[in-house]
Amino acid sequence: MTLRVRGIVLESTLLYLRARLSPAEQASVRNGLDAECLALVDGIADRRAWYPAAVLVRLMEACAAALPQDPEETYWRMGRQSCDDTLTAVYRLMSRFSNPEFILRRAVRLWNDYYDRGEFEVLETLPESGAVRVTGAGFSHPALCRRIGGWIERAVEITGGREVEVEHPACALADGGEAEEWRARWKL
Image (tube, rainbow, N blue to C red; front, side, top):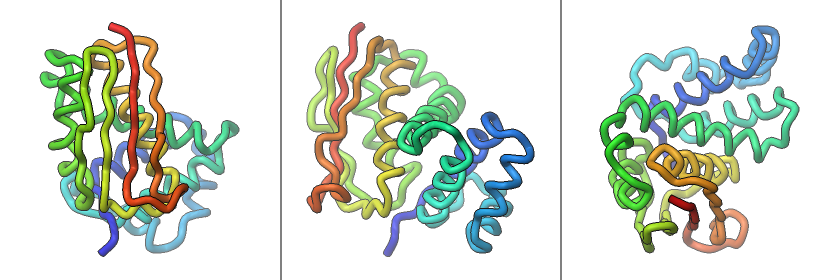
């Protein structure tokens, strides 16, 4: 079974694309998508439905190819956008009345709202740092790793962290391991 994401994750990526690309660039991105991806992207009507993560990756790659910055930076920014779209909209009260430690601990539950596979665990939370791990998600592309790193960075900022630094010391795709791990540090 392959990883699937909620429609809201794809929707956030489309919002990112529309906000940063001209209509002509958007058309170019659409022309670069395969029929399956295009059909799913056009058919996103249910934010709660599950879609193959491969569609998300192809959309992210197509968008990154149309932008001038390094694709890694684009994927990171997409994660930040996704956090803005979810924490400041869907989970507005939670983000307003929490702190970085709380949001990292709460991310265990948030994970299952957006991804249908993988075990998310908090390794540590301290007043100015935290670490999380995902095992068994079956990430298919580094874009997903970068996206989640960007999401973590923005979540910490939204909940009061400043000068946030996020590292990705363990990557199943890069090192052949079993887990994805992110560590964050911030100032309050």
